[in-house]
Image 1 (cartoon, helix red, strand yellow):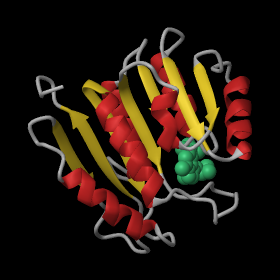
Image 2 (cartoon, protein in one colour; image 1 turned 30 degrees about the vertical axis):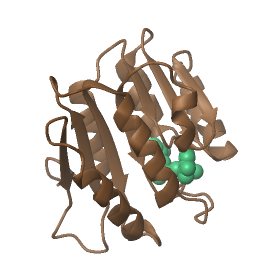
Image 3 (cartoon, protein in one colour; image 1 turned 90 degrees about the horizontal axis):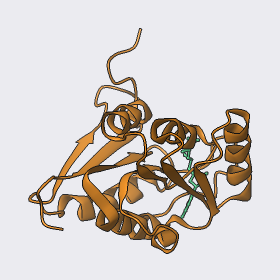
Image 4 (cartoon, rainbow, N blue to C red; image 1 turned 90 degrees about the vertical axis):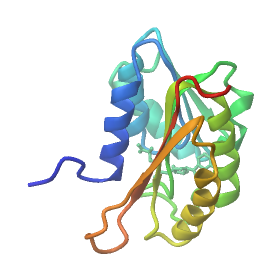
Length: 193
Ligand SMILES: C[S@@+](CC[C@H](N)C(=O)[O-])C[C@H]1O[C@@H](n2cnc3c(N)ncnc32)[C@H](O)[C@@H]1O
């Protein structure tokens, strides 16, 4: 039996589903195997758009195959580039941005997100966020370098103005082996632009 939240990735999907609507513009900052990308594509529908990034060709190909098999390719832009460049590809404001950090499951574990690029991407996504829009960040403190990445992002996230952003963080404090944690950033309606 599992509880209401289950795990950090599941929370990210619950949050995104509560905010994102058909026709929205959204971002998957780390598409990996494509599970978050297809979830976003189905939420925004054919009138919306998903910009999905990954630095690895294998991740872009796997995501393409998943989207193709589920006939959800049309409204997805797959981008093989560092998510720190996301503003070069997206002209509009965004309703959501999902960061599922770390390495590609079943792939090369040495290729993983890093605190410098994650911070750059996060700063840009925060600036591009629409009113009521959300950013979800799933952290893997149990992975090598994961706790350091989390600590760095906490410095930035904890200093965001509470007038403009609601920032919350969930961790499963009674689970073993440093389970994933999630931070949720929501742009507060009426906050300064
Ligand atoms: C945990 S996986 C993502 C899982 C994915 N969201 C899914 O649903 O399957 C993390 C991914 O981040 C990618 N990545 C690492 N650094 C990156 C960067 N700077 N820019 C974009 N993607 C990056 C990795 O290649 C890896 O595929």
